[in-house]
Image 1: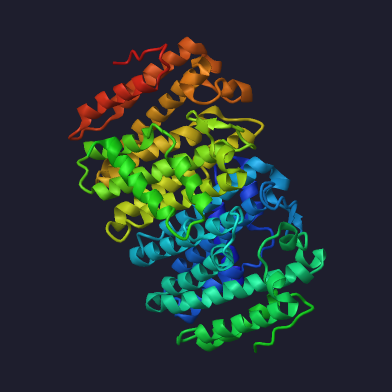
Image 2: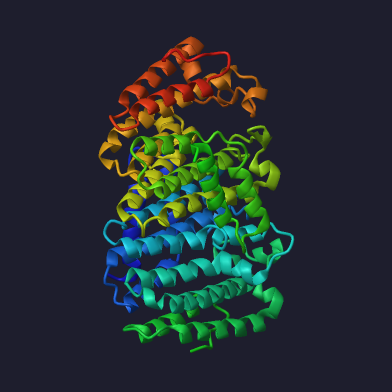
Amino acid sequence: MEPSSRIESALEAAVARASAEPAPPQLAQAIRHAVFAGGARVRPRLCLTVAAACGDDAPELADAAAVAIELMHCASLVHDDLPCFDDAATRRGQPSVHAAYGERLAVLAGDALIVHALETLALQVPQAPQRAAQLLTTVSGATGVPRGITAGQAWESEPEVPVAEYHQAKTGSLFAAATVAGAVAAGAEAQAAQWRSVGEYLGEAYQVADDLRDALSAEEELGKPAGQDSAHGLPSAVADLGVKGAKERLDRLVEEAVGAVPECAGAEQLRAGILKEMERVLPKTLGCNAA
Amino acid sequence: MEPSSRIESALEAAVARASAEPAPPQLAQAIRHAVFAGGARVRPRLCLTVAAACGDDAPELADAAAVAIELMHCASLVHDDLPCFDDAATRRGQPSVHAAYGERLAVLAGDALIVHALETLALQVPQAPQRAAQLLTTVSGATGVPRGITAGQAWESEPEVPVAEYHQAKTGSLFAAATVAGAVAAGAEAQAAQWRSVGEYLGEAYQVADDLRDALSAEEELGKPAGQDSAHGLPSAVADLGVKGAKERLDRLVEEAVGAVPECAGAEQLRAGILKEMERVLPKTLGCNAA
């Protein structure tokens, strides 16, 4: 199955389980809205691509990992859009969850997605205890405290923001979880540290690309209000380095990511995929020179 | 070790792990505030009491279950107190988390506690895969969708609230998880269905007691604004049955809970403990006649 349709099928099964009777109807709809609102599925595709490069000998486990990571990402977006954070009325060109269903259901949909993400992995423990245990702590570590997404987001409430910690926790952690989880799901745990590096470089590259998009893109292209980072005074590679400097940094990070891919059956294909992916996420006015 | 000091030690260890470097300082404080603000620890005590009645042959696992359940309970209180829900400035006589640390950190502290609750169980998978897997799905099922706490809370946003589903999901589910988890942690999985009944009866009893307290107690005794349920138009046993009817219902539920305790080494002690506990949670102006 094509990675993207494989991901959508796995997400559909997970959301169907969450929104089954006796779920309250509006919460079920809010969860569905949060998960199926046109996301690019960057992290679960990365997870499955790494699993494939490592042999993908347990595809159900890889699917569960990809689903858990994407559900966590969706949960973080729903809560990030809340009035007390970004107060975003739109997301990917559609109403944000709180705009469509109200703030209460947005809080609860995020909470439920966090639980459901880890439950998806917990259901794999009986079949593959060792790998599933490691997937669980990989995903929880990337999302909780002291160094996951929630920690990253919380740095924005501190008077002084350590920029590297902030980006690593807020964005890098879930990218690193995606690459590590892909490897662990396929039994390549011995290479987990190398795959973590790949994910960390890509996470930072994606963050820089996002900063560039945020600074340069028209609101239409982005599907959300542009210029949010500078409006909120958040750390940004463009603010620190300028557009040219940020673009150079991005190219270097992509090179580092490609260079960090460990030797495995699908290494060459994966390196090419990384370059293609980074082209996709760049603003249309820029190109990626790292190839 | 006394159950209550055993619970505090286990919670302290879990919160120390969450708030270790490099956690953002205010988020770490908000989490600590959420967990150590004078909670009665009803659910983790119930969990450890059931584990003890079943032999408690794996105390670390029982501790992890009790911690996971209490962290989930704390997370739900933090999010329930948010301005978009109860907008409660106080909790247990102290500032609520959002009153003390702001709404953003309250959302994030709740999110982080949910992740950390399940991570605490995930860390037990290598030592006891089967029991830990069941503990994970017991706790996730009691908190997520379609029938956990988040679902229960979401029923409040529906135009029609099925009262039994609502109470079962919002309160009963975590009590049932506490009894089931206590049994599972101690290897008494075969009696899980009976323990679930005990937890469900107790959860409903606790809910009725809470309704009675909410209707009758002075704000000083409760530590939070009184009369919240009727003010928000939520389903309440007192509104449905009156004070006398609600008290009779409570006595019947306690009897049912006591009657449902399966035969095990510590059954008698546990039955006595249930009666004592229900005395404690009743408003001081009422007494429990079920003994």
